[in-house]
Image 1 (cartoon, rainbow, N blue to C red):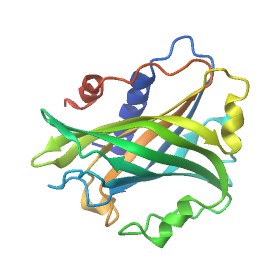
Image 2 (image 1 turned 90 degrees about the vertical axis):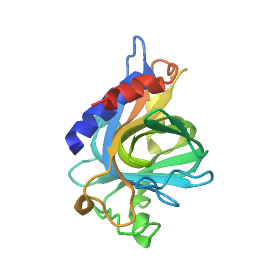
Image 3 (image 1 turned 90 degrees about the horizontal axis):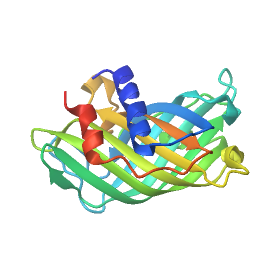
Amino acid sequence: MRLQTLASLALALVLVSTVPANAENFILMDYSGYAYETGGLGDGLPSDIGDVLVLTGVADTYDDLFGVQPSSQEVTVYIYDLVSDGGVVDGEFLRIAYSGGKIAVYEDAVLNHDWGTNPPNPELSTFTDGQLLFEGDFTRFNLDLKIAGSFGVGAGAYSGDIDGVGGTAAQLCDGAEDCAYTFGGAFSKPIAVQLPDGYDIQIAGTLEVDAAVPVGPAGSFSAIKSLYQN
């Protein structure tokens, strides 16, 4: 599955999971990158209870309201402290819920992001330098793996809700009684030359700020699964 296809699926997933009505102010950021879980994920390695998922990415596009200069600044996404509940097999899918979890988005005048290899590694600091643009705590995070073979990752999706707590982009919701932050995306197990050593999956997704209406009920896993039936 090509990355541009993943990005389209990611956007569809976010729209499914938010289900807004009469929204007036959607603010979007699209990103891509890589993720890893302690203990490994996929290729015969299930998500064990207590494993920690980390997602790292770079914004590909973002709304002008974020106030970032695309010609001279990069925007990086760092998500950490997502603790696995071990997952439950549901047909051809492995459903994993995570507790905890934080997101930090930075804008940086130095275009230096570097995934390195075998994380955690010193290069990950390039995703947390610069000025803090947005930060928040996850109130929900779920990951849906399509099982290929014995827990091998063929394709999948993830989604979460965020309690935004700060950063220079916090003013995006100033004066809004209801403000929802939704995070979602899609992933696949790319060929080896596309995946840095030590990372488990390639990701593409969207951070959505809805400053007009509250987020609706999370999209059902049956709806998410429908994106990956082919």
